[in-house]
Image (cartoon, rainbow, N blue to C red; front, side, top):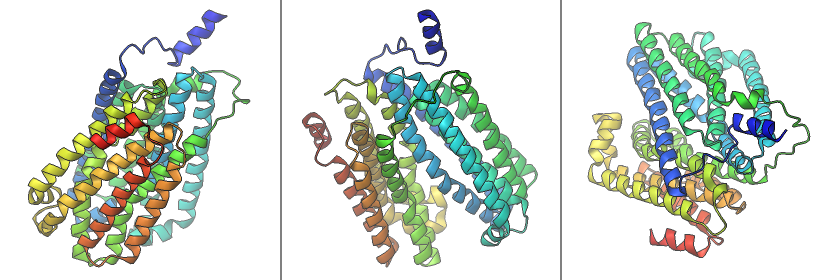
Length: 431
């Protein structure tokens, strides 16, 4: 009986025998795999976007990018939920609580199916309103867009499970499959340059990638266990969801507000600057997931994980800020083109703001994972305050950057406040 139980545990990846590396070595290895997966997926995504913009032209290409932006914005919900799932799965994995992981997998897939079905019904009922909003004549485009959103959400949730399980090699393979599919979709868009084909190609790539990714968690889908009595604690995860939701608002709200309130040309310049600055946030996006997947292996009083992750963010942020300050015109021209060169003076301050936001993300994630649940609502309050300030004070793009910088610095201060123990406090302050 014991042997059978051990076989079950090994079959779903719950064995601890593979944990043989030191914490820093494991972090470096998994960070490298997660970084490669992130860069592979994001790189192929940008190739698809560039191909669509070039092939479709100004009007249809603009509609495509607007649809894609909406998909990304709504996918933030799945991304934030996925981050909390990483923490919960890592916690259950450290306790070899496979029953809880099975229950969590089934619950999340059930809620994903309900939400996706509701979204598709809404699109079916209101597709003409959506077509008018995006200035689209083809009714089928919105249906493909809803499929792309549902598939992207599933892909993000499955990858959150993989990171919580510490299966970063599987994460890299999943990203490789997605990248190959998106490259194929890019070719289809270039060969047949039509908006409906572009959105359908994106939806097909994401759908196949999402279904394929389920292969990597199939042991949990097949695992037979009585999970009805398992109660999944979500208190800590709820705080993380609130914090990351606030941080996502701080990442995207400024560009939307600038687009609405600033003159057309100036808002374009601002969003080009923001796009360049968010490269840093995108590059470091994998670190919280890596950290959360390892945090429950730490002994009480051991802050080596924070030292390594915080140090990586501070070093990367510092290097990025130096580059932004040294080559602002080059960066803005590479990102958006010579027409946006007037935004060069904003590149460095926005880069500083992006560096603080990246630091706030990892600090808040670490603090909440270590039990400081109040950090989640506190960060959300900062995000709401920053958004309110932007809505009331936006005389120029430079003023918007100043408000964003102040908000991001405050987020780091709030996330670091009070409960950081002396070793971690010394690490942060020294850095």
